[in-house]
Length: 213
Image (tube, rainbow, N blue to C red; front, side, top):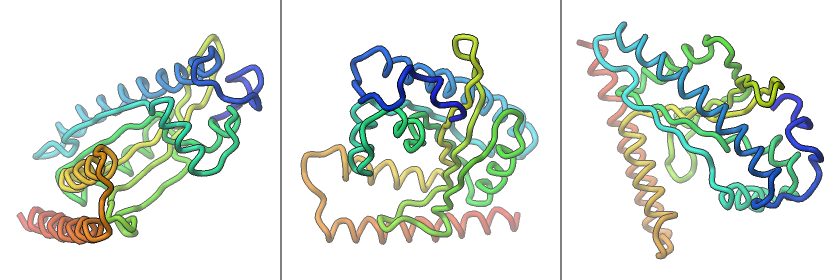
């Protein structure tokens, strides 16, 4: 985020998720998230009219919960102050785009890079280099300008681009790994990783089959 010092009165003060400063920072991310979401919905409308199918299947968004933010900062061993939050936690505002085919991901990435007011500052290709768990997607960290209390701020948001099959696997894996009380076993983790590879092969075959049409 550009000029992150202006977001709060003292960026080195400890984070208190119940105080006014924290609510103000989250509000800034909410404004940025809504602006980016609006732009992506317009993009969906424009490009879906250009293709023979809906290249953007679905768009969803979320703001990380206060506890999730603190958990991530603790996991990464950041001191719990606002400067570290703004500089190092890039996915407080997050948008997920799902598309039918793997080839669509590169198309969407290129279109997003060319959108007005959006600047891409970081990319992570988990398709060529899946996570150890098997997770695949293409992540973009972008900055988008907003006006907040008569100040222009550039706010970071994360955009995840996945195929529908990648999204199915990621949603199921997340629920099994984080939304149940039972700790997932090593064997089950290996099975999930193998299932991800199967899904990746299916994605590739479906994309090739469509291109032949």
